[in-house]
Image (spheres, rainbow, N blue to C red):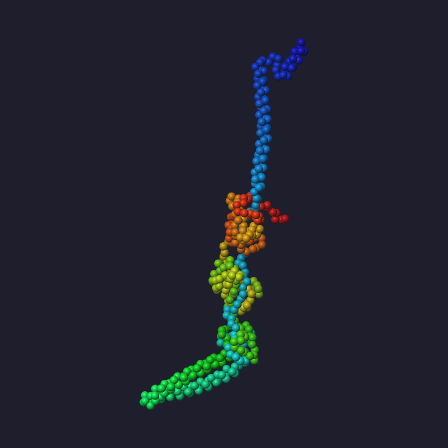
Amino acid sequence: MNSLESNEAELLSAAGRRPDTPAHEAQGRGSRLFFLGVVIVVLLGLAYVAGLVPRRMARAQLNKDTRELAVLAVSVVNAAPAKASGAPALPAEVKPWVESPIYARANGYLKRWTVDLGATVEAGQLLAEIEAPEINLDLARVRAELAQGEAGLALAKTTAARWELLRKAGTVSEQELSEKQADLALKNAAVTAARATVTRLEEMLSFTRIVAPFAGTITARRTDVGELIVAGSGKELFRLAQTGRLRVFVQVPQTMTARIVVGQAAELLLPELAGRAIPARVARTSGMVNADSRTVLTELEVENPKGEILAGSYAQVRFTETRGDAVLSLPAHSLLFRSDGAQVAVVRADDTVELRSVTMGRDFGATVEILAGVAANERVILNPLDSLVNGTRVRVVELPTVDAGK
């Protein structure tokens, strides 16, 4: 009996109850089993939810990424101030202050010349003489005719005075007096014409002496002794230039004309005077843009008291006092070239594209000056697609960092 009771007690113990357990203790064990089942169900529910939520979040993120990737990704840049390159040096041409070719006004042969190439002369100084025998002969003839006319005029005056007295005495008629007075007027006109001819020939004879019209330097002599001189042939005998002060002509680009004013200081640069900047001053401008070159002809004055600057030289001019507005620049690969001209694609605040026409300045290769059309704080797309249109939605991404050492 003891062994049977011991086995029964062990079975009851394995079943969770003791042989002497009361009924209310069995009910407590049932409640615990129910609570345990509920906990297991809750844990299984939480495990299910914990697995479902990440999948849904992953699916939502995937949908979001898909939508973002469907939008065109672009890199942008802001327009930066152009690098200061200093005042540009513009090509210029140096001219004398006064320059004049000297021609002959009298026909003949060159008798002699008194100055040669490079000579410095004063105003009125004799340069050459022309032998003009024909003018001398014509002058002698006209002077004789003048003397003859003056003698006839004197006789006509005396005759007219006498006939006027006779007319008062009634000896001659009014007609005869009128004839004598008309002869006097005719003789007077002939003498006047002869004097004019003498004056003209004397002036022509004075042209046989070629003199300097102003002080300067002989820059060319194109005649020699014995050469036939024909007035009006267009052959230049001498060229005279005044080089103590020089004129410098420069074609200023249209983009700079608004900043060039009369009296403004400038610098003249010459290859043979390397390292030296000669002061100059703006004297005047043409006031008109050349339609062919889109430039304005500008004249400067330069003092040249020592003659170290040669007229006719090639030079460069730098306008040192030029102050312009700040100019922006953009990378060259941010430009679009279409039928409307140069354009850029600007990303607006709502991430849509606006195509903007711009005015280009100087082209530096990698960058281009932008004179108008873009502000410094606006986002400009790099490498824009040709298919871009206004209103296209884009997604701005950061530019990749490039290792400068590679």
